[in-house]
Image 1 (tube, rainbow, N blue to C red):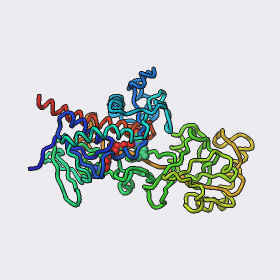
Image 2: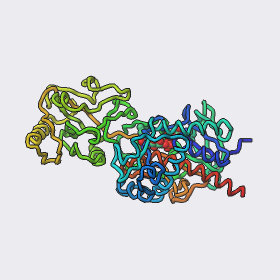
Image 3: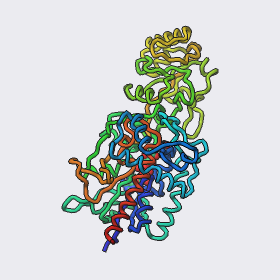
Image 4: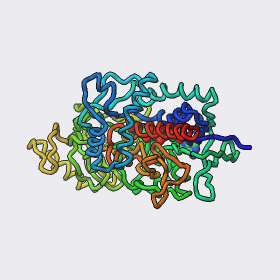
Length: 476
Ligand SMILES: Cc1cc2nc3c(=O)[nH]c(=O)nc-3n(C[C@H](O)[C@H](O)[C@H](O)COP(=O)(O)OP(=O)(O)OC[C@H]3O[C@@H](n4cnc5c(N)ncnc54)[C@H](O)[C@@H]3O)c2cc1C
C-alpha cells in the first residue's frame, strides 16, 4: 500500500520550504519532492531583497508604515497592475514572514530599510535584505527544514521531478506523477502544492507564451514544469504576455539565451557618459533619466529589446568606468572585438557596420549629440548630463539587451491560493505559490521592490498553515 500524506509540496525553494515547514510544524504528514540535488531553489540565485510594512525594524526606527500604505504604494509603482486579491494578501502577510525569518536569526543589513535601490523607490523605507543576498534567508530556514526532515515530519525526496498531476474522476487533484533515476513514481495526497518556480529557463515554453525575446539569468530548474502540469489538467494560465525586462545586459554566450549577465546602467549607480542608440543608429531615450522604469520601458519597445551603447576613447579614459563585468567579475573591456557584443573601430561608420546599423545614421546622431554637448542643451531628449563630445578614435560600442531573472505569467489562484480552471473555479486539492503564479501578479509589468521573493515565502507559509488548520479542524 502506498504511503499516506496530507500534502505533497512540489519544489523545495523559496515558497516550497516555508510551505513544508509550516505544514509539518502544524502536524501534517508532508512529502516534498524537488528535481534538484539540494533544497533552496532560486534562493541560491536571488538578490534576496524583500519588502514588508509595519515591521519591528521600522518601529524601532520610528518609521510609520502599514500594509495598506505598502499596497497603495506598490500599485502606484506597478501602474495598478497588481492582482487586487493577491496583492493585499501577500503584502498583508509580509511582516509576519519577515518576523519569522528574524526570529530564526535573519540579520538585516545595517543600511536597510531603504525606500529603493535599483528599482523605483517606495515612498517610505520598507525594503530590506540580509548580508549575503538570499543565501542569508536560506541559512536561517534550512536548519529548521533539516530538523523536520530528520525527525520524519517532512519526507524529502531530492532528484525527484514531478512529471504530471493525478486527478480523480471529478477532476480533483489526488497526487503527482514523478520520475527519479529513470524510475516512474506516483505519490498520492488530498492536497498538492505546486511551488516549482517560473519558466525563464525554458526557452520553448517562453517562446510559446511570452512575446519578448528571452535573455535570462536564473535557476536552471525554472523550467515551468508546474505550469505545464497544471495547464495539462485545465488550469488557467495568464499574464504571460505582460513583461518588463531589466535594463540591461548581454548574452555571455551569444547562442545561449540563458547565459545573460548584467551591466549596471541605472542612473542611480552612475550618470551615463555614453549615448544609447537603436538598431537604426538613433537615440531613443534620455540616457540620464532618473526613472529606471522609463529606461526599462523604452528598451522594451525596441526590436529585440536591443540597443548599442556608444562612446569614444576620451570617455573611456575620463569617465567613471561603466561596470562591464562578466559573471566571474572579469572586466570585459579589454575584450573588445573578441565578443560580438563588444566592438571597437577607428571610425563611427565602421563601428556602425559592426552592429548592422546604417553608418550615416550613427554619424549624424553623434554629430547632433556633440552639438548638444557644445550648446549644453539636448533639444531631442532633454538630457541634462552632457559631459563631453564623442569624437576621439577608437570608438566603442556595446550591444545591450533587456534581461530577465523572472517569468511574467503563470497559474491563476484565488484568495485561498487554490489553482483555478478556465472558468475560475478552484481545482480541488491543488494549490500554488511562488513564481509559478507569474511575477506580474504581484508586481505588475514593473519592478516593485521585493515583490517576488517575499510573496513567494508568504504564500508558501500560508499554504502550510492552511493545511495544518484543515487537519486541526477535521480532528476537532
Ligand atoms: C538573479 C535573481 C535575482 C533576484 N532578486 C530578487 C530580489 O532581490 N527580490 C525579489 O523579490 N525577487 C528576486 N528574484 C526573484 C525571486 O527570487 C524568485 O521569484 C523566487 O525566489 C522564486 O521562488 P519559487 O519558490 O517560486 O521558486 P524556486 O525558489 O526556484 O523554487 C522552485 C523549486 O522547484 C523545483 N522544481 C522545479 N521543477 C520541478 C519539478 N518538475 N519537480 C520537482 N521540483 C521542481 C526547483 O528545483 C526549485 O528548487 C530574483 C531572481 C533571480 C534569478
